[in-house]
Amino acid sequence: MSIPRIGLVGSGSWAERTHAPALAAHPGVAFTGVWGRRPEAAAALAAAHGVPAHSGEDGFAELLATSDALAFALPPDVQAPLATRAAEAGRHLLLDKPIATEVATARALADAVTTAGVASVVFTTMRFAPSSAAWLAGLAGRDGWITGRAEWFGGLYGSDADPSPDSPWRRAKGGLWDVGPHALSVLLAVLGDIEAVTAVRGAPDLTHLVLRHASGATSSAALTLSAPKAAAGVSVTFRGTEGVESLPEGRDTSVTSFTAAIDALLTAIDTKTPHPCDVRFGARLTELLAQAEGQLKAAGA
Image 1 (cartoon, rainbow, N blue to C red):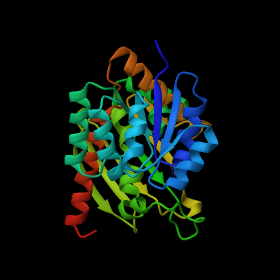
Image 2: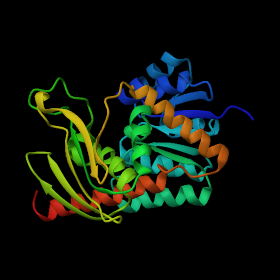
Image 3: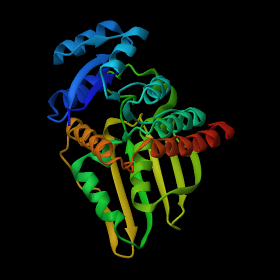
Protein backbone atom coordinates (compact mmCIF):
# COMPACT_ATOMS: atom_id res chain seq x y z
CA MET A 1 0.00 0.00 0.00
CA SER A 2 1.32 3.49 -0.83
CA ILE A 3 2.11 5.90 1.96
CA PRO A 4 -0.88 8.23 2.62
CA ARG A 5 -0.28 11.79 1.48
CA ILE A 6 -1.34 14.42 4.03
CA GLY A 7 -1.47 18.17 3.46
CA LEU A 8 -1.69 20.86 6.14
CA VAL A 9 -4.37 23.54 5.99
CA GLY A 10 -3.26 26.43 8.18
CA SER A 11 0.01 28.27 8.75
CA GLY A 12 -0.34 29.98 12.13
CA SER A 13 1.59 29.42 15.35
CA TRP A 14 -0.19 26.15 16.24
CA ALA A 15 0.51 24.76 12.77
CA GLU A 16 4.13 25.88 13.07
CA ARG A 17 4.72 24.41 16.54
CA THR A 18 2.68 21.21 16.31
CA HIS A 19 1.05 20.12 13.07
CA ALA A 20 3.87 20.70 10.61
CA PRO A 21 6.66 19.15 12.76
CA ALA A 22 4.52 16.08 13.47
CA LEU A 23 3.60 15.56 9.83
CA ALA A 24 7.16 16.12 8.62
CA ALA A 25 8.62 13.63 11.11
CA HIS A 26 5.97 10.90 10.78
CA PRO A 27 7.41 7.85 8.97
CA GLY A 28 4.00 6.64 7.83
CA VAL A 29 2.87 9.66 5.83
CA ALA A 30 4.09 11.86 2.99
CA PHE A 31 3.76 15.55 3.92
CA THR A 32 2.46 17.12 0.71
CA GLY A 33 2.35 20.84 1.43
CA VAL A 34 0.97 23.79 3.40
CA TRP A 35 -2.01 25.96 2.53
CA GLY A 36 -2.47 29.25 4.37
CA ARG A 37 -4.68 32.30 4.20
CA ARG A 38 -1.55 34.47 4.36
CA PRO A 39 0.73 33.55 1.44
CA GLU A 40 3.88 34.72 3.23
CA ALA A 41 3.17 32.59 6.31
CA ALA A 42 2.36 29.54 4.19
CA ALA A 43 5.57 30.04 2.22
CA ALA A 44 7.72 30.33 5.34
CA LEU A 45 6.25 27.25 7.02
CA ALA A 46 6.40 25.18 3.85
CA ALA A 47 10.02 26.20 3.23
CA ALA A 48 10.97 25.13 6.77
CA HIS A 49 9.85 21.59 5.94
CA GLY A 50 10.78 21.43 2.28
CA VAL A 51 7.22 21.10 0.94
CA PRO A 52 5.16 23.18 -1.52
CA ALA A 53 3.27 26.26 -0.32
CA HIS A 54 -0.28 27.08 -1.41
CA SER A 55 -2.73 29.91 -0.86
CA GLY A 56 -5.98 31.16 -2.30
CA GLU A 57 -8.72 29.20 -4.02
CA ASP A 58 -6.46 27.67 -6.66
CA GLY A 59 -3.91 26.73 -4.01
CA PHE A 60 -6.48 24.85 -1.96
CA ALA A 61 -7.53 22.93 -5.06
CA GLU A 62 -3.87 22.08 -5.73
CA LEU A 63 -3.36 20.75 -2.20
CA LEU A 64 -6.54 18.68 -2.49
CA ALA A 65 -5.32 17.21 -5.76
CA THR A 66 -2.01 16.07 -4.27
CA SER A 67 -3.31 14.76 -0.92
CA ASP A 68 -5.23 11.75 0.37
CA ALA A 69 -6.01 13.51 3.66
CA LEU A 70 -5.86 17.01 5.12
CA ALA A 71 -4.89 18.12 8.62
CA PHE A 72 -6.43 21.40 9.76
CA ALA A 73 -5.04 24.14 11.98
CA LEU A 74 -7.55 26.93 11.40
CA PRO A 75 -10.22 28.85 13.33
CA PRO A 76 -13.31 26.65 13.56
CA ASP A 77 -15.57 28.63 11.25
CA VAL A 78 -12.84 28.84 8.62
CA GLN A 79 -12.04 25.14 9.03
CA ALA A 80 -15.60 23.84 8.63
CA PRO A 81 -16.39 24.89 5.02
CA LEU A 82 -12.94 23.90 3.76
CA ALA A 83 -13.15 20.53 5.54
CA THR A 84 -16.61 19.96 4.05
CA ARG A 85 -15.19 20.57 0.58
CA ALA A 86 -12.33 18.19 1.30
CA ALA A 87 -14.70 15.44 2.48
CA GLU A 88 -16.87 15.89 -0.59
CA ALA A 89 -13.71 15.45 -2.66
CA GLY A 90 -13.04 12.12 -0.91
CA ARG A 91 -10.27 13.29 1.42
CA HIS A 92 -9.83 11.99 4.96
CA LEU A 93 -9.81 14.63 7.71
CA LEU A 94 -7.71 15.35 10.80
CA LEU A 95 -9.66 18.22 12.35
CA ASP A 96 -8.93 20.74 15.07
CA LYS A 97 -11.36 21.39 17.89
CA PRO A 98 -14.02 22.73 17.87
CA ILE A 99 -14.92 21.63 14.37
CA ALA A 100 -17.34 24.58 14.13
CA THR A 101 -19.13 26.99 16.46
CA GLU A 102 -22.53 26.69 14.75
CA VAL A 103 -24.49 23.48 15.23
CA ALA A 104 -25.85 23.40 11.68
CA THR A 105 -22.35 23.84 10.25
CA ALA A 106 -20.92 21.07 12.42
CA ARG A 107 -23.72 18.70 11.45
CA ALA A 108 -23.29 19.52 7.77
CA LEU A 109 -19.60 18.67 8.00
CA ALA A 110 -20.40 15.40 9.79
CA ASP A 111 -22.99 14.54 7.13
CA ALA A 112 -20.48 15.25 4.35
CA VAL A 113 -17.95 12.90 5.97
CA THR A 114 -20.58 10.17 6.36
CA THR A 115 -21.83 10.52 2.80
CA ALA A 116 -18.32 10.42 1.37
CA GLY A 117 -17.31 7.45 3.52
CA VAL A 118 -14.01 9.06 4.54
CA ALA A 119 -12.22 8.72 7.86
CA SER A 120 -12.06 11.55 10.37
CA VAL A 121 -10.37 12.32 13.69
CA VAL A 122 -10.86 15.42 15.88
CA PHE A 123 -7.75 16.38 17.83
CA THR A 124 -8.41 17.08 21.50
CA THR A 125 -5.03 16.89 23.19
CA MET A 126 -5.76 14.71 26.23
CA ARG A 127 -7.57 12.06 24.22
CA PHE A 128 -4.32 11.49 22.28
CA ALA A 129 -1.45 12.45 24.59
CA PRO A 130 -0.09 8.99 25.52
CA SER A 131 -0.11 9.47 29.31
CA SER A 132 -3.61 10.94 29.61
CA ALA A 133 -5.08 8.71 26.88
CA ALA A 134 -3.92 5.58 28.72
CA TRP A 135 -5.28 6.93 32.02
CA LEU A 136 -8.69 7.74 30.49
CA ALA A 137 -8.91 4.35 28.78
CA GLY A 138 -8.33 2.62 32.11
CA LEU A 139 -11.00 4.66 33.87
CA ALA A 140 -13.53 4.16 31.07
CA GLY A 141 -13.29 0.41 31.58
CA ARG A 142 -14.45 0.64 35.20
CA ASP A 143 -17.93 1.05 36.66
CA GLY A 144 -19.10 2.98 39.69
CA TRP A 145 -18.18 6.55 38.79
CA ILE A 146 -20.52 9.08 40.36
CA THR A 147 -18.90 12.37 39.39
CA GLY A 148 -16.00 14.09 37.67
CA ARG A 149 -14.54 17.58 37.53
CA ALA A 150 -12.35 19.20 34.88
CA GLU A 151 -10.68 22.58 35.31
CA TRP A 152 -8.93 24.37 32.44
CA PHE A 153 -7.47 27.67 33.64
CA GLY A 154 -5.53 29.10 30.71
CA GLY A 155 -3.55 32.31 31.08
CA LEU A 156 -3.49 33.53 27.47
CA TYR A 157 -5.37 36.74 28.18
CA GLY A 158 -4.87 37.28 31.92
CA SER A 159 -3.84 40.69 33.21
CA ASP A 160 -0.28 39.45 33.76
CA ALA A 161 -0.10 37.31 30.61
CA ASP A 162 2.82 37.33 28.24
CA PRO A 163 2.07 38.86 24.83
CA SER A 164 -1.10 37.04 23.81
CA PRO A 165 -1.42 35.14 20.54
CA ASP A 166 -3.04 36.78 17.56
CA SER A 167 -6.21 34.70 17.62
CA PRO A 168 -9.35 36.80 17.12
CA TRP A 169 -11.70 33.82 17.35
CA ARG A 170 -10.32 32.87 20.78
CA ARG A 171 -10.78 36.41 22.06
CA ALA A 172 -14.32 36.46 20.70
CA LYS A 173 -15.42 33.00 21.88
CA GLY A 174 -13.32 32.68 25.06
CA GLY A 175 -12.47 29.69 27.17
CA LEU A 176 -15.86 28.01 26.70
CA TRP A 177 -15.10 27.28 23.05
CA ASP A 178 -11.31 26.96 23.16
CA VAL A 179 -10.70 24.78 26.21
CA GLY A 180 -14.28 23.59 26.66
CA PRO A 181 -13.78 20.84 24.05
CA HIS A 182 -10.84 19.50 26.05
CA ALA A 183 -12.84 19.38 29.28
CA LEU A 184 -15.91 17.80 27.69
CA SER A 185 -13.81 15.25 25.82
CA VAL A 186 -12.32 13.79 29.01
CA LEU A 187 -15.62 13.81 30.93
CA LEU A 188 -17.39 12.12 28.02
CA ALA A 189 -14.64 9.50 27.76
CA VAL A 190 -15.23 8.24 31.30
CA LEU A 191 -18.83 9.15 32.19
CA GLY A 192 -20.54 8.81 28.81
CA ASP A 193 -22.81 11.10 26.83
CA ILE A 194 -24.26 14.25 28.37
CA GLU A 195 -28.02 14.76 28.47
CA ALA A 196 -28.26 18.11 30.29
CA VAL A 197 -26.02 21.20 30.52
CA THR A 198 -26.22 24.17 32.89
CA ALA A 199 -23.87 27.10 32.34
CA VAL A 200 -23.01 30.01 34.64
CA ARG A 201 -20.60 32.86 33.94
CA GLY A 202 -18.24 33.93 36.70
CA ALA A 203 -15.44 36.45 36.29
CA PRO A 204 -14.92 37.67 32.72
CA ASP A 205 -14.41 34.59 30.54
CA LEU A 206 -14.76 32.17 33.47
CA THR A 207 -17.53 29.70 32.63
CA HIS A 208 -18.80 26.99 34.98
CA LEU A 209 -20.65 23.99 33.55
CA VAL A 210 -22.73 21.45 35.47
CA LEU A 211 -23.44 18.33 33.43
CA ARG A 212 -25.77 15.34 33.82
CA HIS A 213 -24.68 12.22 31.99
CA ALA A 214 -26.92 9.50 30.59
CA SER A 215 -25.10 7.05 32.89
CA GLY A 216 -26.59 8.81 35.92
CA ALA A 217 -23.31 10.45 36.89
CA THR A 218 -22.93 14.21 37.15
CA SER A 219 -19.86 16.32 36.47
CA SER A 220 -18.65 19.89 36.33
CA ALA A 221 -16.10 22.01 34.48
CA ALA A 222 -14.48 25.41 34.96
CA LEU A 223 -13.12 27.07 31.81
CA THR A 224 -11.18 30.26 31.11
CA LEU A 225 -8.39 31.73 29.01
CA SER A 226 -7.94 34.72 31.34
CA ALA A 227 -6.56 33.24 34.55
CA PRO A 228 -3.68 35.05 36.29
CA LYS A 229 -0.40 33.18 35.95
CA ALA A 230 -0.46 32.00 39.56
CA ALA A 231 -3.88 30.41 39.05
CA ALA A 232 -3.27 28.82 35.65
CA GLY A 233 -3.31 25.06 35.24
CA VAL A 234 -5.32 21.99 34.35
CA SER A 235 -6.80 19.38 36.65
CA VAL A 236 -9.19 16.45 36.13
CA THR A 237 -10.64 14.29 38.92
CA PHE A 238 -13.12 11.41 38.97
CA ARG A 239 -14.79 9.98 42.07
CA GLY A 240 -16.62 6.69 42.42
CA THR A 241 -17.07 3.49 44.37
CA GLU A 242 -13.41 2.57 43.93
CA GLY A 243 -12.09 5.89 45.15
CA VAL A 244 -10.62 9.03 43.60
CA GLU A 245 -8.57 9.26 40.41
CA SER A 246 -6.72 12.41 39.36
CA LEU A 247 -5.00 13.23 36.10
CA PRO A 248 -1.37 12.07 36.31
CA GLU A 249 1.42 14.44 35.43
CA GLY A 250 2.61 13.83 31.91
CA ARG A 251 5.53 15.01 29.85
CA ASP A 252 3.88 14.56 26.48
CA THR A 253 4.50 17.38 24.03
CA SER A 254 1.93 18.73 21.60
CA VAL A 255 3.92 17.12 18.76
CA THR A 256 3.81 13.72 20.49
CA SER A 257 0.07 14.08 21.02
CA PHE A 258 -0.61 15.14 17.44
CA THR A 259 1.52 12.27 16.18
CA ALA A 260 -0.83 9.92 18.05
CA ALA A 261 -3.78 11.61 16.31
CA ILE A 262 -2.13 11.01 12.93
CA ASP A 263 -1.72 7.34 13.90
CA ALA A 264 -5.40 7.20 14.84
CA LEU A 265 -6.43 8.60 11.46
CA LEU A 266 -4.22 6.09 9.62
CA THR A 267 -5.79 3.24 11.61
CA ALA A 268 -9.30 4.51 10.82
CA ILE A 269 -8.40 4.66 7.13
CA ASP A 270 -6.90 1.17 7.09
CA THR A 271 -9.61 -0.54 9.14
CA LYS A 272 -12.55 1.54 7.91
CA THR A 273 -13.61 1.69 11.56
CA PRO A 274 -14.69 5.08 12.96
CA HIS A 275 -12.51 6.46 15.74
CA PRO A 276 -14.29 7.43 18.99
CA CYS A 277 -13.10 11.01 18.40
CA ASP A 278 -14.42 11.28 14.86
CA VAL A 279 -16.39 14.10 13.26
CA ARG A 280 -19.64 12.97 14.92
CA PHE A 281 -17.88 13.33 18.27
CA GLY A 282 -16.77 16.79 17.14
CA ALA A 283 -20.34 17.72 16.20
CA ARG A 284 -21.55 16.56 19.61
CA LEU A 285 -19.03 18.85 21.30
CA THR A 286 -20.35 21.77 19.26
CA GLU A 287 -23.94 20.92 20.23
CA LEU A 288 -23.07 20.91 23.94
CA LEU A 289 -21.02 24.10 23.81
CA ALA A 290 -23.76 25.86 21.83
CA GLN A 291 -26.29 24.88 24.50
CA ALA A 292 -24.06 26.39 27.18
CA GLU A 293 -23.45 29.55 25.15
CA GLY A 294 -27.18 29.95 24.57
CA GLN A 295 -27.85 29.82 28.31
CA LEU A 296 -25.18 32.42 29.00
CA LYS A 297 -26.60 34.78 26.37
CA ALA A 298 -30.13 34.33 27.72
CA ALA A 299 -28.86 35.25 31.19
CA GLY A 300 -27.08 38.29 29.80
CA ALA A 301 -23.67 36.92 30.69
